Length: 354
Image (cartoon, rainbow, N blue to C red; front, side):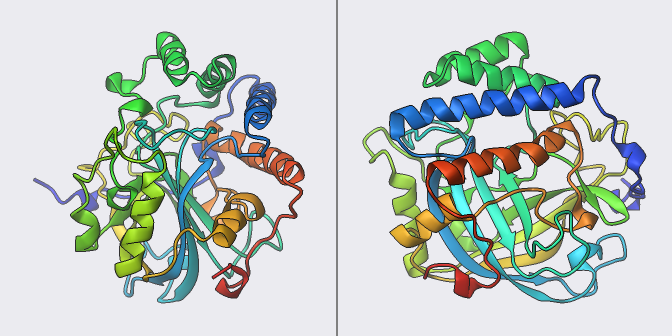
């Protein structure tokens, strides 16, 4: 069998993306529908939650160390040479509401790398954000199908089963998979994926955060039970970080074939036999208090986590990522207004409540 790394990564150019017909209108309708859904949640909770990943399970800080002697195809952007960065990490659950942890929901990990130098997608912004999910794909693979899913979430607000049923009826998930089949295990044990594609300097790639600490790997069978408290995951994260560090490898999967690894259809899982995930950096999160009120409020209501915060070299690709560009800006402004908060971008870890 040939070495998968023998496949040459494709070269990035503007032609890797193809706009949908009426894409601008689709994006606008998606943002409007998401805001209406957030307004429904606000009427219940009297708090401006984000449209997705509303429920925090922990907020921690640490460092990212870029691997040395990376080959040219991996030495892109901030990974071009050995370096160290401060990072902030948030663990959360995917829906825009506050569900009990027994619910089998997708979980998320947001990674904010501070003080990254280089040409930025948003001039003057200093961080590089990576947003990850426990699923390697987005079942609603493009912006048009995603709009249908967001519309179902609005129409069946507060009824997750009805939302999933309505979405699946119109657009069956690939291979019968749905987000509500994600195991309700300890968030420290999950692997996390960028789902969509990104520019990776001269190439195109997806990202992943893979746990490598033995203590994390041992938690794969640590499942939430029906008798656990509804917010037990945050308790587990606090318990974990009270005793030990967490460690992840930040990995990259290079696109080697646009035909089988499409940029515009995020529902297609890229073949790891054709192009395996390869490590570009290690993220280390030392023992600390992970859920203080000050830190939770700062992460949920003051900071923002957006895939379009970052380097031009890591530009998000595909129609769902293009929705996120305008969507995160407008919906983030709505959230900060509702909570009477001014958005703050931390420049160093000294800006993060400790």
